[in-house]
Amino acid sequence: MDGWDVFWLVAAGVVIAATLAVAVTLLVKLVRARRLLGATGIPMSSKVLFWASVVYLVSPVDLLPDPVLLDDIGFLLVALRSLHKAAERAGVTGRVRPEGGPDAVGGPLG
Image (cartoon, rainbow, N blue to C red):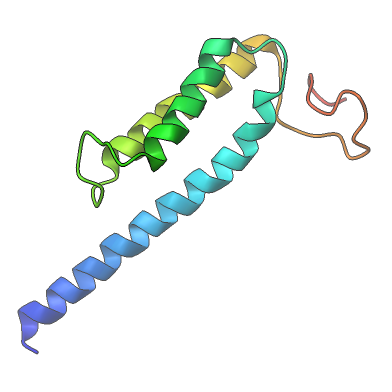
């Protein structure tokens, strides 16, 4: 192996590690955002945008080839931001009460 082979191997490893870090972060945000989908007061358009981005993420049809996930990640980030902004405007938080009462997804916890 010469110097360039090692360089490209390390560069590929860094790109793969960065992609996995972004994917894990988005997965955590998706799980947290799922709680908001059942809340009332959030416009249906924000919920539909979220589900459309999830469908686009797993669909084989993309604007960019699949190894380049920039379009998928970008669309998902826009949908998550829209969902969270709509939840803020509606006064809904994604936090769940420990006792899981009737207001499991609701206003600020007191």
